[in-house]
Image (cartoon, rainbow, N blue to C red; front, side):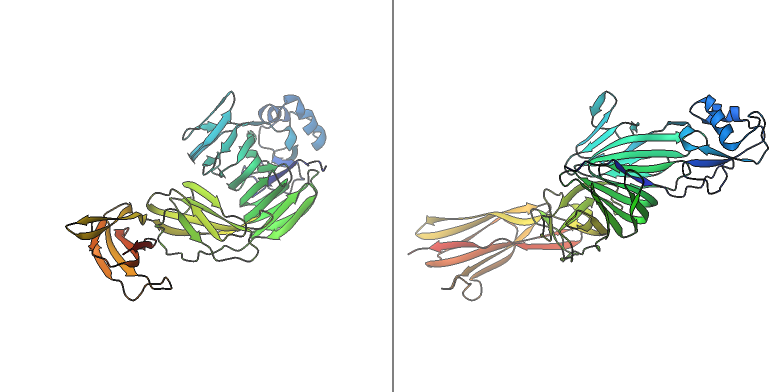
Length: 446
């Protein structure tokens, strides 16, 4: 059995400090350069910025400072990052939908809008649930459906206010858009099987526990995928991804954004079903629904079955929505996406039934149906005689448009086999919606 390696994804974007006291030079990895200001002493710097005041001695030896109480203004000191004090930082719940659980300290339950979130908290989402986490520097993280993410580090360095954040995707996915960060801060997303150092701002990370495999997808910037010992295994730029397992990492191009077969179609059926043009290399497709084009207020997500170029969303209320559409490879790497606007306006005809009664020596046939959807509807009733081949025999024997009642009666139909159907029409969202019911058969004996 292959043992899993501890690995991570880290954002290392725009690392030069904006603090005038931190020199904008190429400091070695694991250190930052500090430019001495008037009045600085090593002892005062240690008290203000280091984990332990006594660590000033390490700084003194490293930089060969003769007198820790007197230094030349403008001199550059090399400070090891591991000695710098990082104070607790916080994030907040910027929005959520569905079954979201926040485990923080001794309490576990649903979060509240704007609630503060601390280091060590765990966010869990159920089906069609989303939570958006706002970080203190304007970055944000979205935890989509069926995921669990642990916030392993929320810190801010005392020396310059640089934020340092880390999280672990224990199952499912996380999506992040990260603002440029000062040194020595950073942004890290861990999974059990991959390490990626990201020089960019927009990326996704997913972990498939069953397959013991992770996928990192770069939307903007650059990603270095590393093993636990820091060895670079692959580097991806925008529109590229990395699939990683315990045995290594592999660079792959992101699939192109797929397209809908009928992008202007009003979704009027019992379920919202989107047909997708088959995309080479796609194993399945993913759709996310939101009330805004930026997907900030997302509320539903679905994957198609393998090899099925359709997405289905049941129980969708009428309204104007946005669909973000992407394709996934057989290895689970999600490709580039495109966003469509669409109208959901239920319009259907169901509950079709027929009956007959004898009155004053005449046989009356009553046809009934039920309107499905919101708003005023009108109907068209058609009845045709079937030929020997089961197809309609000539034009309809009865064709009555403009009906407002959900029933229609005919009398004295001669023996034979008939087919009848009903069209439902209504005006919604500035569109005329029309749909035919499934044909129904009626047999009349002698």
